[in-house]
Length: 215
Image (cartoon, rainbow, N blue to C red; front, side, top):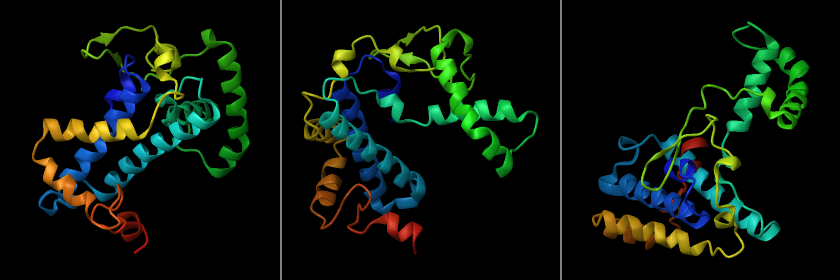
């Protein structure tokens, strides 16, 4: 789940393949012996499925709008929002929590501060909470002067272009990867694929998003 976000040597297709393998393995474990929430809480299962679906959708839109620009999977995370929140907390001061009035008075200024820091990166000090190291394919840690993985951490941007990518291929390769490493998943995934209306968020044919959040 985390590897495609922290390994800077993976191509865009390989990143999507890892996310696809994540979904198929989760589906198999969720359905296996009717594990469901005994294996993983339903909200977490739904959130992971939506996260992967969003990644594929964003790549599809990038393939249409900006096919010759690199696509950075790490920019789909909440890091930018966390940075803005950190700036906002700095403005508010020593209060443990900010109220609606403080939020309304300062939230616009956080964007201005963020723009200034982007123009003068030497003035910025990244949040110490974002200390996730980058890795190579062999799981070796890449030492970096910063403690945050961003577009500058990628050396081969041409491998991140969406122009020559067929989204169906990494999706199928992810399933193949799971079935080769865990043979017991073959029959389970086949059963899911033959179930009417079965999807990532409906492994038994009925959407668990609807049944969990609206019933």
